[in-house]
Length: 247
Image 1 (cartoon, rainbow, N blue to C red):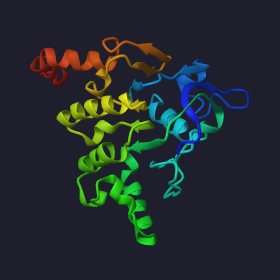
Image 2 (image 1 turned 90 degrees about the horizontal axis):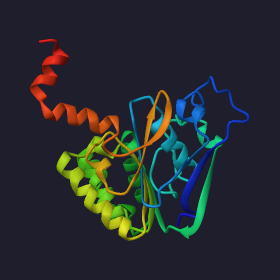
Image 3 (image 1 turned 120 degrees about the vertical axis):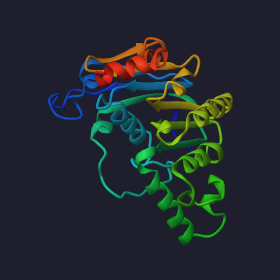
């Protein structure tokens, strides 16, 4: 069980840090004091290096999750690579308590799958993998293993932190993910998602933060650079490609 209530706000504690050193030099940390979190879906968008995944990881660790992903019960580490940011944020939480939770990140899913197999080999029944669909995540494609977690392991009434889940999912599966998200939200789940997917970002009534060199701002779907870039491209792909290639 997740021991803390639903996430409402994140405060940045700057009093004892060097704002010229990473990760505290990231514009969002230097230029903002707090971020409000939506009770259902909060998106983090922006260019690579803007700090989305760094903040997402800090939120996960501050919420009791393993930095490499999994549930709050996972306690393993293959390489210490997470930043110190989690020590310098304060989370404000409500009284409603989620009964499920998961930190899902594409880059370390292999490590999570390995840990599940290790724990199942050491322990008795019921096997952990049964709650992930019953098939080893290592015996599925990257996309299928991602989908197995999302479809089978996410039980509802949960706090789910997702780092670029679209990296493993086709466009049609991303659309299916929207449906599954909606089902889980109807069961009082809360999502925080860092993404480059205009499909996922289209989930209605969500809170969208766009990260840039200027810090972080609240945007509508159509205001995001992500939407505008895809919109410009698909209005006339041959023209855009011609301009990019100088032909």
